[in-house]
Image (tube, rainbow, N blue to C red; front, side, top):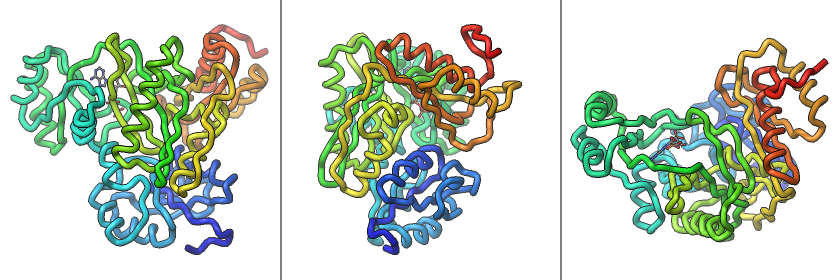
Length: 392
Ligand code: ADP
């Protein structure tokens, strides 16, 4: 491929913050990502010199883009599986490939496959008629959880069904709109965890310490690394399970396995085959970041060491708020108070609830690191200190 440097050209489909941070890691490896973005204002399109504007559902756009790259990878899972199969049949190298990626695209395919592999998942059933949901709830207990098999994120596409009447109200309209559905048992979870691993085409695997992800309204707001109060044998079992899933599904790149921590062990909720919000802490908090590791895997380089660089690392997302202080002034005051805060902004406009950046703190004790990360992120979002600190 046309590369001035002798290195292969990585094409990133999708121009969001994951692509932006992958580009940042790419620079150090002598890379410069080619980005297929929907808009020139996408986070990665603002920073990468080689940007193609096109839609990831447009096969012709994908084909043209692929012709200028040695390997394609993704910052989201929204490319239609059949387009990827077509590209692969035409000789394009796609990592992760469609046979793996479909498990991150379709929750029913994923649940069915993981159950067949003996990986613990919540009990579930496909819903092709409202009667399927009612039968499941009657047999497994109400409330239960209805999910769109494809296209959901940040809790969109997830509905709690209180009882059979709720199912009768909700399911028919969704099915008529063409939304494929599944229903599953509502899990009594203590908290949510994530196992982050990477796998190369050669078959090498690597796993970072297990983390706890703290959600608010279906959106991840904090990640604690390592997950506090987790018995080492449970953490190890989850990491091994994630590596086994990566190998069985033929994943290339980063795989995030979202887990429910229940009193009887962990259950897998979701898979993502790309850098993931639960791994942003690795940029400063681990020997090799998830973004560099994803590139190493996609390029079939040996994977990097994944050990943490501090006993406690916390990443807190900065969500858009409606502060009166300007963004620049907030950042100024943040740095004045916390000299050790690592701040990442994604070049996005602030909108309430939108992930516009994140802050990472490292330290010796989880409680202290967590409270500082939370103060910092809340300040950047809202321009107010939760503990009443005075900026004057
Ligand atoms: P999305 O793909 O939109 O992120 P998820 O399947 O991850 O959807 O679900 C979003 C959130 O809903 C989860 O983080 C969890 O808090 C809650 N949730 C999902 N499935 C269940 C379940 N079976 N039982 C209880 N809570 C659930």
